[in-house]
Image 1 (cartoon, rainbow over the protein chains, first blue to last red):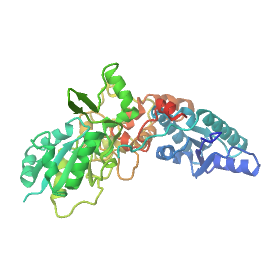
Image 2 (cartoon, each protein chain N blue to C red; image 1 turned 45 degrees about the horizontal axis):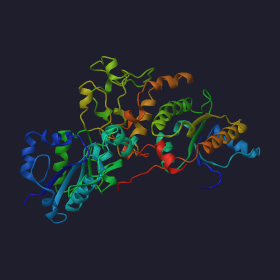
Image 3 (tube, rainbow over the protein chains, first blue to last red; image 1 turned 180 degrees about the vertical axis):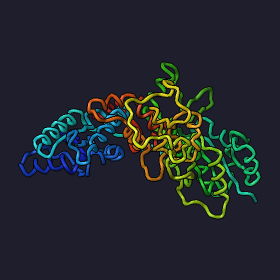
Image 4 (tube, chains in turn orange, brown; image 1 turned 90 degrees about the vertical axis):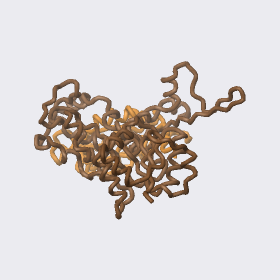
Length: 142
Length: 320
C-alpha cells in the first residue's frame, strides 16, 4: 500500500452550477485535491442511481454529486429529483456496507469556486481517514 | 424421437417446480411433445444417468434457483455440457432471487447465526474408516449466468403458466428466439395493469405505506394509494397477478432490457413519486420506505452492479 492512500472520487457536476464553479475554481487558480474525476452532466437530476453504483462497482472510493441550490435549478426541479434519489440511495448503500462519507450530494452555485475546493478537500480528507473500500469479491463462484 | 428436456433446481424454494405442475392439462401436451430425461423432484433419475448421456443430447435444460454451493455448481456444469439450450427458469436462476439476499452476508456469518456455538457443517469428515462429504457453501450467491452460459431467461417468482407455455412453444418451434432473450414482454408492468387508468398524471406522495397499514381500494392504482408498487420498473408478463390480489408488485419479473440494475431503477421510480417541495421534508418521506435493499433488490441482488455487500470483518482481514 502507498504511504498515503489517495482516494479516487467520481464527481457528477451539473452543467449550470457546480461544473461552472469548478471551472471558476480553475480560472481563479484555487487549488483543490486532484482526487476527483469530474463527469459533466446537464443536471444533477440526470444522475441515474446506476451511474453511482457503477462507479462504486468499478472501484471508486467515493461519489460526489454537485447541483444547483434548491430553487435555482436550470430545469426547475431537477436538483430535487437528485435529492429524492440521494436520500433513498444513501440508505441503500449503507446497507451494502458503503460508509456514508463515501457518497455525498452538495449544492454549489456557479459563483462558489471556493466551495468546490472546500467540499472536495474535505471529502478527500474523510476518505483518507476511512481508507480504501473493502474489496468486493465479485463473481467468485464462477 | 421426441426432444429430450431436463429440469433441475438449485437454491430455490420449490415454487418453480410447482409452476411446472400448475400448467394443468397443458402439462400433458408438454409431456407428449418431449421426453423428460431428468427431473429429481418428480422422476427417479440419478446423476449417473445424466453423466452417461452424450454431450448436447438434451434439447433444453430448465434450471431454477440460484447457485450457492459446490454441488449446485457441479450439477449445472454437467447439465450445460449435456444440453443444447439452457433456460434460467424463474427469477432466482435469472437474477439470484430471494436467496440472493444472503449476499448481504457471507458463509461464515450465516453459519455463526444458524449454528451458534454448535458443530459447523464440514465439507469432509472421517469417521470409523468412512469418508463423509458435504457440498461447500459459497460466500456469494450467484445467478445462473455467472456460473454457466445461459441461452434464455424465464422471469418470475415463479414464472406464470402463460409464459412457460409460450416459452416451451417457442423452443419447440422452427425458429428459436434470439440467444440471451428474456421470454416475456419487454415493457413495464404498469402498461398491463388493470388499474393503470386510475394512476394520476402527476403523483406526489407525502408518505409511503406498507400493505398491513391500510385497506387498499380494489380499483385504484396501488402506488397512488401510497404502497411501494414496483410496477413502473418491472417487466410485464405476469398479468398483474399480485395487483389483482390487491398487493403491490415486488418486482419478481426483473427489469426490462433497457435496464442494467433493477434495484437502482426501481429506487428511482419510487423516489420520483415522493413529494419534494421542501428540502427538509424529503428525508422524512423517504424514511417511510423500509429496508431499501430488501425492497428494491428483493429478487436481484446477485446480478446487481454491486452484487455483494462490503462486510466490516473483511476490512480487518484485508488489513485496510
